[in-house]
Amino acid sequence: MRSSYTRMALAISFAFTVTIALAAPAQYREALKIAPESADALANLGNALVSKNQFDEAIRRARDEIVEASAENGDRDREHDSAEQKPRYWSRLAIKDHDRFILLKAEEVSWVGSATNYSEVHAGNRSYLLRIPISDLETKLDPLRFARISRSAIVRVEEVQEIKTLWHGDFEVVLKDGTVLRMSRRYRDRLLSHG
Image 1 (spheres, rainbow, N blue to C red):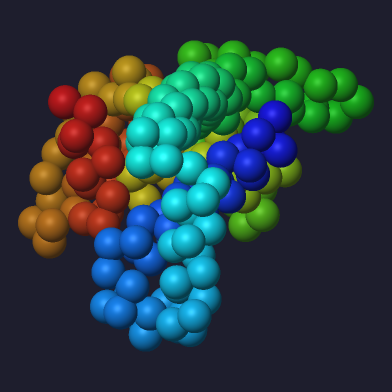
Image 2 (cartoon, rainbow, N blue to C red):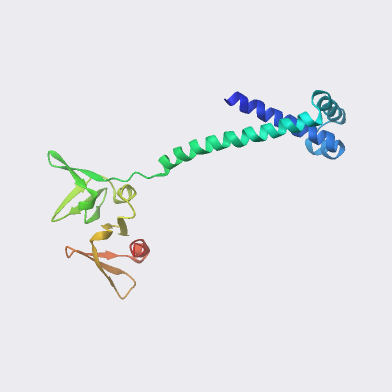
């Protein structure tokens, strides 16, 4: 397959060079750094190898093949790109709890707090330590369902009951379970954009 592309590219390149040499050899010799005798030889070679009609037909076929090949590759690339571009967010969090692992659904998480290199995951009346920094965990959670509200907190948007404005530009976020978290000005658009 690649060899046909290579041949096609060489044919187009040759045809382009012959066209330039035939159209205005003196004008393009200097730009292309073609010696006058080479340009004339190339023009003669082009005239000897193909007629004008054959040349036009070859260019038309080459264009058609390029369009067809790019359409096929475009479809394949779009399928491949859509699979790559579709982010895979965690639907469950595997949390080690003493001697066992708990599989916690993302929908059960109310909010996440930062604890140095750990994330403190709050679900219902329990909290768990997850060995991942909050910045890394943020990339694993669906941004349509979770919003970062400060350097040290992420909330599940459905859990937010109320947002109160504080006098210095920060906010208080009140969750349905009564938890009050501080939202900084830097992160306010992330939560408020959820509507």
